[in-house]
Image (cartoon, rainbow, N blue to C red; front, side):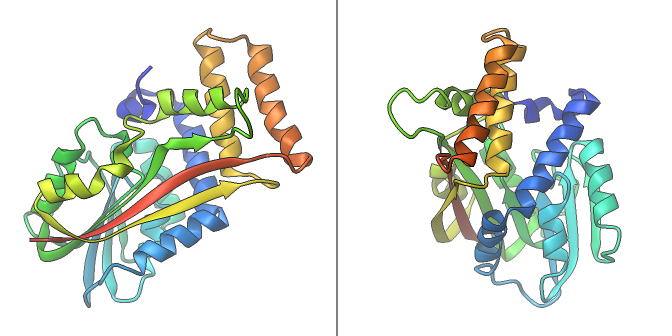
Length: 267
């Protein structure tokens, strides 16, 4: 089954609403917040910076950008009206923040309009990521910066030994919610192909153990996807989710996703 984000505008309202909830859970997780702060601090924002976030979802990253020193305009772009409605609700108190409906492959902005363009866990959902980066190159001014933060979802694991039953949840999550699980390892090459000079490329480890929050949602979505496809029965799906919680209560849970961040200059 393809990545649901590729057809997010066609998804049932309850599915999109659940994903919106997950996006805010992830954004509130302390490790996720630290990773965001770390790579944003590497971007040389100019004075009076105009910033675009492509694939903004519910606007968590855009809200942080709107409060960043020196930033005077932030635009969040997303194809989902449901995500955007939530983004506007949560960002209504920020005067320099706005949201527009649209996709990554045809950015509705003039050439050279922005100083910074950010893709935060967006490229992994795109079937043509190079096209999206070329569009980012177009709407950036010369010398502007591209920032890409994405999951190395091929590294997603819940295993604590060989043949761990929770590994099937990681596999199903990648299969149903990620278009390209390896994209984080290729972003430097793609950025160069799109006309950027890479300034920085770093890895970030994300692990949850005794008190998981976001990684529970990965287990749950993987198990539910398997049940909805009929590949396992609903009782087994519920048992997998219960096992994740049993492990957490017993201090035996382990979940990990690697991430990478890239900062590049538009030539």
